[in-house]
Each structure stands twice: as C-alpha cells, then as structure tokens.
Length: 63
View 1: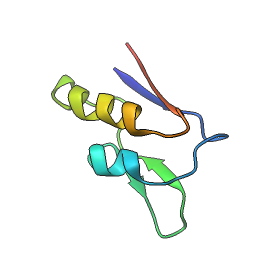
View 2: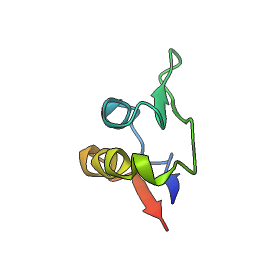
View 3: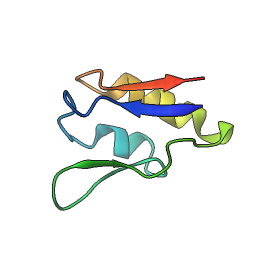
View 4: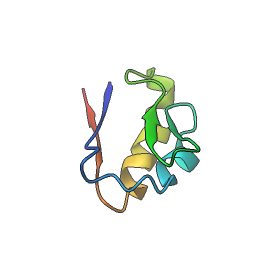
C-alpha cells in the first residue's frame, strides 16, 4: 500500500499520528511528515484508522 497526503488541505492536527505513529509524525515545526510512504500490511489497520480520523480527509491509501 502507498500512503498519500494532500498537504494543501492537511491541518497537521496529529490525529493520524495518534492512530499510526509508525507512519505519521507532526514535528515541532507543526508540519506533518510521512515516515513511511509504503508501510507493510501489518500496519494497514492503523493507517486505515488514520484515514478515518482525518477531519480534512487529506489522507488516502493507494493499493
């Protein structure tokens, strides 16, 4: 799977980081970073939770 974030709408509110800290990180500069664009299938449930939690619907999964 590939994690895609639309940074134009992302508010960096860190809800995705709470759901999947292995994949997402909001740093001290208040920007979201994708730590792993292609996480393994063992993280799919966490990434799907991050997608559901995103209030701006800025995250999607391809594949």
